[in-house]
Length: 547
Image 1: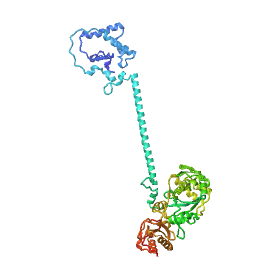
Image 2 (image 1 turned 90 degrees about the horizontal axis):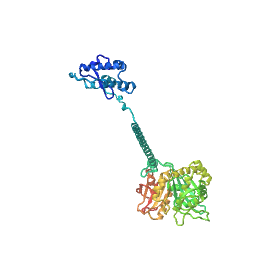
Image 3 (image 1 turned 90 degrees about the vertical axis):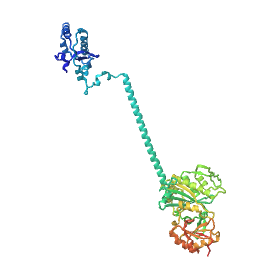
């Protein structure tokens, strides 16, 4: 404690004296001017009077009860001491006598005069400033402040929840965009790879595989549908492109000319009706294909096959009336008509009066496509279905082989990697140029290389002379020379000079031999695209002179 707080210090009066109390009842010490002797004796007289009246020494009391600290002014003892100190100078101090004031001493610093040194030493902070905890009213919360704090806390928590919700929303949007980008990219990548994007051929597409330079592998069989009730036949090729994983049905008109073993030509429909012996080989000669087997499918067995797979759904292009004599039911026209076995046979063989053969062939193709979509994907299950149907009649094509192929083609049909095409034929039975370029070469893969292993090269003959006798003579000359004859029909217009074309350089020597056989100059031989699917193609002009 500071000595200046002790009233009995003999030196305290020389330095500072109690000069009053502040508004909070705290004593204030300071230096006072020199007083007269009467004024100096007044406090002593007061003390003596007070001691006589109350019975104890003022200074002794002051020693026993030090002045209360204002910071603890709420206690009972502090209140008594404060009240006593306030009452003594105000009520008992005598009136000062008038006297000449002594000269004022040197004024003390302002800070020491206002705040006593002991108080500053006890309450001041490390920097000499007052501490905040001295002011009790600052720490006293009231109801309004608590409400404000609660409202601020609520507002802050709600703002944080909103920000968190926004962040989660943004994260979800970003995640969704990433997922969509991956999905779209993967879908486009698959479509590109499969070659299903326009103007873009992926490696998995037919054109993409062809552009890669690899030869495409195809498995195919020929199907002959015999109408046992009304007569007539319909022929189609079922193709499984192993390389591109696509399937196709190629419809062959009955008017297509196929060669016999003696070299003469015969219509396909008549060749099938005669038993179809050697028909697949004749088709290989014309188309440059490699047919693996023949499937004879009479209408009763087609009816049984449709029933075995549970019926089929076909988009019918015409209404088929019922035929009581043939015992065939009626078929309605429309999309996705569900057909039973008998209805499928009636629709596949229907040809209205005056309709071209192509219309009836397209209906047959629609029924075959619908049946393939219902064939089991498991080869063993498909083989069981074929065995239950019965009738194949080709030693080279048993139930297991046919069932396995039908299951593979059926898988292509189920996913839409399938098409049905009609082979266009001229009136004379020969193939059109467009049919040779698209259906034969692209879909069937027919080319001259398919028959290179044959004993004799395939030579196609087109007549541009306009004289039928000239063509017959040239045909006989080729057959006598040991060549396999391919009928190219008549050219669209006549030409003066004959021409012999070949596509592969390896066939040039054969082309020259053909020119010698026909008595044509070697200058007629040129490399170019063959209009007929054969190793060498001869187009007879008016300069050809039969020997």
